[in-house]
Amino acid sequence: MLANRANDRDDRAMRDVKLTRGIMKNANGSCLAEFGDTRVLCTATIEDRAPGWRKGSGKGWLTAEYAMLPAAGNKRTRRETNGRNGRSMEIERLIGRSLRNVCDLNAMGGEVTMTIDCDVLQADGGTRTAAITGAWVAAYDAFEMWKTAGRIKTNPLFGQVAAISVGLVEGRLMLDLDYEEDSNAEIDMNVVMNAKGEIVEIQGTGEQVSFSRDRLNEFLDMAEEGIKVLLAAQKDVLGIEYQESSRVRDLWRTRFCSRNGVEEK
Figure 1 (spheres, rainbow, N blue to C red):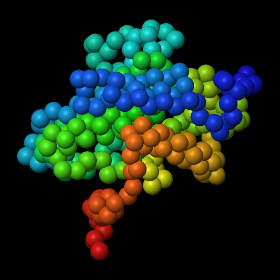
Figure 2: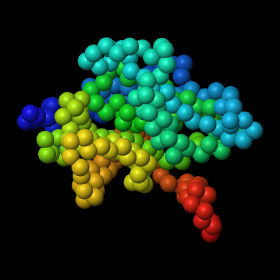
Figure 3: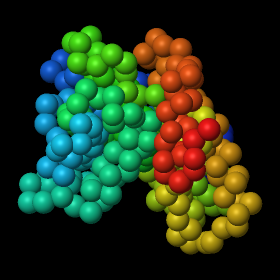
C-alpha cells in the first residue's frame, strides 16, 4: 500500500527536477537530467557521415542510443555486449522520434548525423522521460556549437520537446511516477509533448484495468502540467527565451502540408 508518496509530495506534484549542462567536455553537447533519484546522462555528438540509406539526400539525420549502467537499478543488469535488448531499442527509438519531431533535418549542415547517447546512471522510474527532456538540452547545445563553428546558420531545433509519466496507482491519479509507484500502477503512461502543447507520442497501458476516453483526457491534462514545468526548466538552464518565430510557423506549416497532402496557402 502506498499511503503517502515519497517526500510526502502531492499526487499532482513532480519530483525535484534538475538539468545540468556541460557534463562531458568531449561531447558537442551534454546534459545530466535528474528526476528525483533518477539520473540520466545525455550527450550529443555530430559526425560528418550519414546512414547509407540517407546518402545523396543532402539532409542530416538524428538518432539516439539508450542503455542502463549495470548498477543503475536495484539489481545488477548485464551490459549489452552481445546485442541490444528489446527494451533499450524501443526506448532509443522513442527518443529519436521525439527529437526529430522538432528538428529541421534540412538545416543540419548537409549529410551529417547527430547521435544522442542516453546512459542511465541511476534508475528510479521515468528514465525514458528524463532521457527525452535532457536529450533536447544536449542537442540544443551541440547545434549551437555547430553554428559557432560556421557549419550552420541557424539552430535546426525549431521547438522544444519534453516528456513525463502519469499513472493510476491504487485508484489515485499521479504525476511523475517513481519506480515503486510505476511497479504498482493499474495504468501507466508516458507522454511526449512539444511547447505548443501538441502530443508527439503517447505510450499507455491498462495493465490491470481498462480506461475511458475521459480518463485519458485526465491523464493528458496532468501530463501537460508537468511538461510545462520541464519546458521552463530547459529554457532556464540554457538561459534562452524560446519563442515561436515566423520561420518556425512556416516550418510547421510546411511539415503539416507535406505529411497530410494539403496544398500550402
